[in-house]
Length: 78
Ligand SMILES: Nc1ncnc2c1ncn2[C@@H]1O[C@H](COP(=O)(O)OP(=O)(O)OP(=O)(O)O)[C@@H](O)[C@H]1O
Ligand SMILES: [Mg+2]
Image (cartoon, rainbow, N blue to C red; front, top):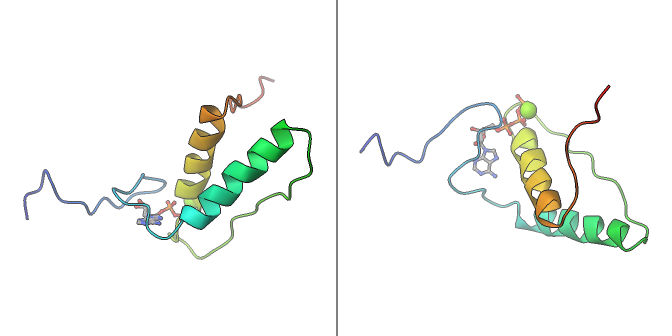
């Protein structure tokens, strides 16, 4: 295996080369964000699961979607 092209990239929150099997969740998150932007009701999300199942990667991806939709995702300054 060419180490430069090796797709195996383990790490906490590391974006994988292919975010497998999560499109439905990401679509639902995008819809929820747009509904809130339009002043409509949307259910909150909580990602739960075993260690390493991909919660942090999903949260980071939802952050990217929110930024693309024009949201400010910076943490509040205290
Ligand atoms: N859908 C996916 N497809 C492929 N690889 C994934 C997927 N989700 C996560 N991974 C990979 O799995 C690893 C662990 O992901 P992540 O750190 O998001 O897990 P976690 O659930 O937040 O773990 P922890 O419970 O330890 O915080 C990372 O290397 C990530 O790239
Ligand atoms: Mg995590």
